[in-house]
Image 1: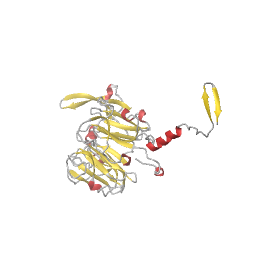
Image 2: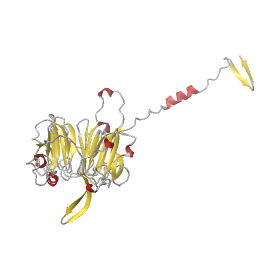
Image 3: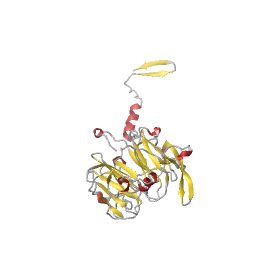
Image 4: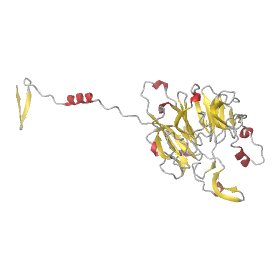
Length: 371
């Protein structure tokens, strides 16, 4: 979140961090492992006004503050929290190995984490079973963030998918690594040679146009619209039998209701977007991650009513949980002190005349003046 430096003398609008949805590993940072169906405020975390980035992975969450600190919580069996151990963490905890290394951005995959420093260096931790850490000859997992040495140019932005990651450099080049999309590529392009960036376990340059499209499965409403035509339903093979078909959309289409969105975050099968300061959610809702108080899937983007009184600044999705940084309504002016109220009451009291003053006495309908 960026703030206007010229407004430093003004009282900043209050903000708060909320979390809801799946919580099997403590990924909501609330200190327990129970699912939460409605947005719940985190009161014991760092000052929300200092939050710069929020995001979630398969079962873990990460927050970056304005000061460059990284806080993490949730599932940690592969070391994706970067804390040097593999125990789950139920409350947001600072990543102590990075305390002297200011962080600019963080991106969470299913079981790994990508970290961008203020100096443009990229670090990674967690599972490396699909080459998603960008360290081709490294261990199967890293418990402490480790630099991706093959990214030699300064990086300005990062992103992570299920089991792959991307980085954009200062010169506009995009690199991708991790083999998580290779199987999908082979199904879509049978018999064809896949681009190197889909099969590389080290950063490989992406040579596509840079346009962004969305399509794919829609059985939980994750595309933001229902597919009504039969061509949208694709059967899936399982052994020698056909599984129950799932709706899919192979042609990219836009969602007009999200035009002008300033933030979009995708979970496993649910999504969040910020449009005009309003948080919208749609898709899979089994654990309440759409924040509407229920567990029925949401087929089209709709506002999260529990956050309607706040202006949403940032959103982040995990596989089955959600996070939002909100700017709260301005506080009312403080109540007057007891002394001030007493003084005000005295000023409103009528002033009685002294005997030496002239005054008027009313007696029935007559008015007389005495000295």
